Image (spheres, rainbow, N blue to C red):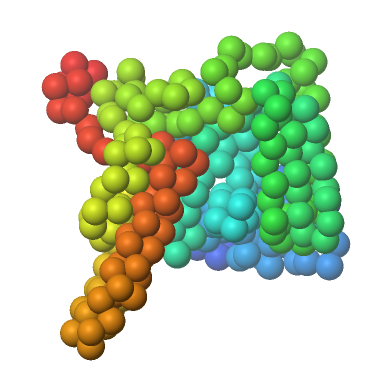
Length: 285
């Protein structure tokens, strides 16, 4: 990894007419780190869109004086996931199809990471102290080279300072409204009053009418695509029934709705999906 001093990066950002939020404390030399074969302009041009896309979330999620050290896009369990390393913890953001941060969100304090292992080619495995593990099945080569030294330095400093905050699980769920920590098995944020879908309730909703499940937890674009696909399948089911293939039509209907319900259940188990923000709680806060 080649870390550049902050001043040349600031000058290059101004030259390229690219602005970062002054409210976020970036360590520019590692955020825009590069390989020896890359120019500074290439490193900035490649990383800037992702960093900028994260800023609305970072402005809410970061603690006071928390510093952003590194931002990259990986793939966690075949789901595009943004990884942010700060001086205190690792933040994980799911993304939509345009690689914009989207619920659910998580945080892992460095004190909760037992080991970070490069596995094979573009893979990473993170072993956590509660016995769970995260496996990135894709990690861009360039980011893979730079991720390890940035993480190791930050984790070492945290260990030296003895920072080990209490947690309910190693990978904590974050509220997708205010980004406060929501304890394990919790489906309501004490900080802002937001409530979240339980796996069973979302599964039931998805099974009864799949598009309804997509509409409440996915982006509008993704939900619209799901709705179109479902109605195409439903049209085919109706066609089969009209042709006298009633048994096959019923089987296909049950399998389709059951698959959607199972998918919704897994989504809700994976992380918190916003259901409702209670206005009376917002007024208090």
